[in-house]
Length: 126
Image 1 (cartoon, rainbow, N blue to C red):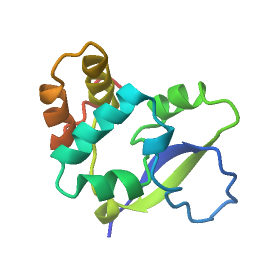
Image 2: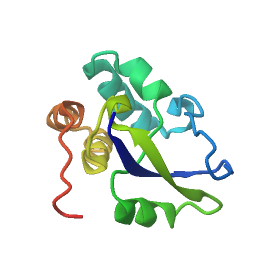
Image 3: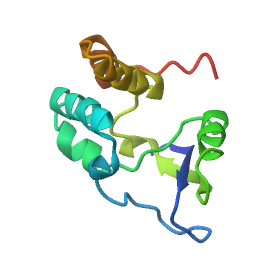
Image 4: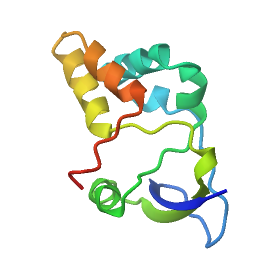
C-alpha cells in the first residue's frame, strides 16, 4: 500500500506517532444552513451518512491546511501518514462552501452537491 502525507487540525492533543481517529459525527456542531448543506451531501453520496459521520477529515496540501488552521484558535496542526487505499472520498472544500452559500440564498445547491460528491478536487490553485 502506498503511504501519503496529509494534514489535519484538531482540538485534541496527540503525541508523536499516536493514531488519530475520527472524533465522531460533526453534524450537531454545524449551523442550520450548514446542516442543510450537509444533509444534501449525505443524501447524494452512496453511504453518505456513514461516510460523513465517521470519516477523519484531512487536507491533501499543507498550505490550505495552515490557512484554515490559523483561524482555529487552540487547535493543533498535524502531519499524518495514511494508506492511500484508506481514503474513501476526496472533495473540494470550496464546493462545500458553495453549497452552504446556495442554501443561505435559498437557491438550489444541486450542481455544487454533484461536484462535491463526484470527488473532483481542484488542486491547481494551491
